Length: 289
Image 1 (tube, helix red, strand yellow):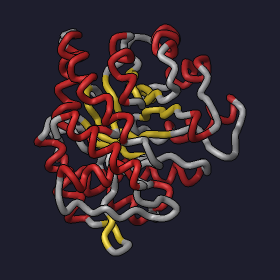
Image 2 (cartoon, helix red, strand yellow):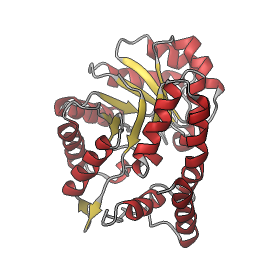
Image 3 (cartoon, rainbow, N blue to C red):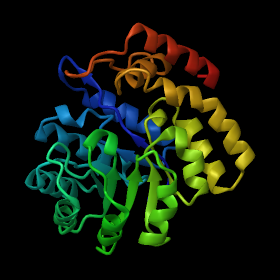
Image 4 (tube, rainbow, N blue to C red):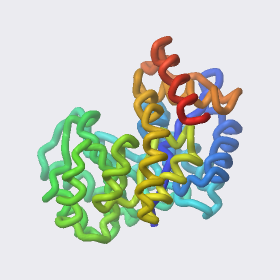
């Protein structure tokens, strides 16, 4: 169900509100460029600053725009289990294909608490992709906990942003070959897929959707020379988009490749600094964008 280049979508804001027209246009461009899945309301989408009503609207718009052409994986993570359940139920009602869930951040529960939280959202019946990102949550879904969660019928995979490629093999052995593993790090996607991954939930695909889709197709075809060529072309951009707090550099880059795309961010996020902008400019030139 989930594979290839799946974009962790930015959220366009204009004058403090979600720019729905810009978002619809952006989604259509993403699909036309070869993106194979859409993730609204994730970290890159500044989900922590969205109201519940805005969250619902963004998921609904993504589902409508996709029109069944590509799956929509709604970011529904929260450190409050009741709120995570509420967001997941709303995503189900909107017609999302799956929900993406982090373990609770800030609270820092033990592994039993992580399991209980994620099992609670899984009870709703919507397919669940786990999102393991210790750098942001300060918690880690241990491999044996992931294996327990994989026993639930609708926990279907993981977006792995641990930065540890060995986890791909460990999770494959623990959770089974059918458990979908997606890289959460663009710069590691080549090695991740070579070790059994199915794709990437990508920040870079916001800016370079066609190149990211071509890269993913090359890995599926085991055309490693072509994949390496594309990796080298994209690598400076992967790094540049995190040369300042994300998604500031990504929104700046989008303004370069799609003039008129809204650059606004919500506090506490601020625009990319001058040094970051120079780095992005050089990376876009290197990628031929």
